[in-house]
Structure formats: C-alpha cells, structure tokens
Image (cartoon, rainbow, N blue to C red; front, side):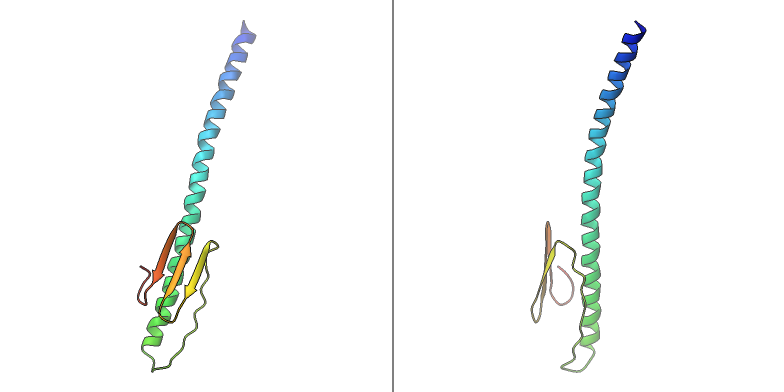
Length: 103
C-alpha cells in the first residue's frame, strides 16, 4: 500500500513538473523575443539621435558642409540612404527618416 502511494505521488509530481516546464518555456521564449525587439528599437533610436545631431550641426554651417555619420544597424535591419532620406527596414517594423525624425 505504501509503495502504491509513493508511486502515485511520484507520477503526480512528474506530471506537474512537465506542465510547469511547458508553461515556463513558453514564457521564456516570449520574454527573449521581447528583449530582442527592445534591443532593435534602442539601436534604431540611437541611430536616430546620431542622424539628428549631424543634421543640426550641418544646418548651422555654410552651404556645402558635409558631416559623416556612422550608424550601427541592428542585425535584422537594412538601411537605404538617398540624398534627402534614410529608410530603415527591419523584420517586423519599418521606419523612415524624413530629415527631422524617424516617422
């Protein structure tokens, strides 16, 4: 009788651990996806600040002024730079720089 109770307890414990691990793994996956997206958004904001700073510096200089800006692109983003715009395509979202801010 005692052995049967022990085995039943162990089976219940294993089932509960399996259910708990399934729920936990799903939450960990969601959390990692959100952290990667936040990291990408922070990199985009950093690029935005760099470009805005360069635009402000060039705007107060005389005609023909040039300023080089180094942008660190997130791993899943592609930049497209024209004479008056910067387009940023990332997986899941896209932003376009219009000369004043990313829209």
